Length: 105
Image (cartoon, rainbow, N blue to C red; front, side, top):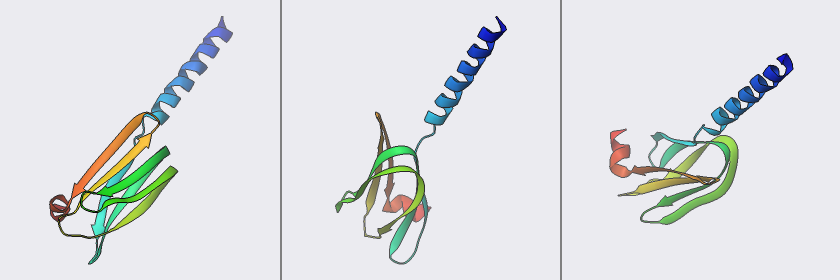
């Protein structure tokens, strides 16, 4: 009976840790700008297809990324609206930034 309880406890811990690991979502944060560029920090906890689009310019970047944090540099434009889209398996995460929002940050 003790062996069965130990196995069930170990299984519960494994399931819980797997659920916690999968619940970490990708993140995109605006980190600043200079005269010509906007800077963002992107975190991808698992494998994801990342695409960055501008409503005026179209797709700026697209790549398969896995388990990393990195910076994205985007040239500043007037009236810019950026859309960061990450597809992780069946989940889709979207973060939107426009020039008015960025001016307030």
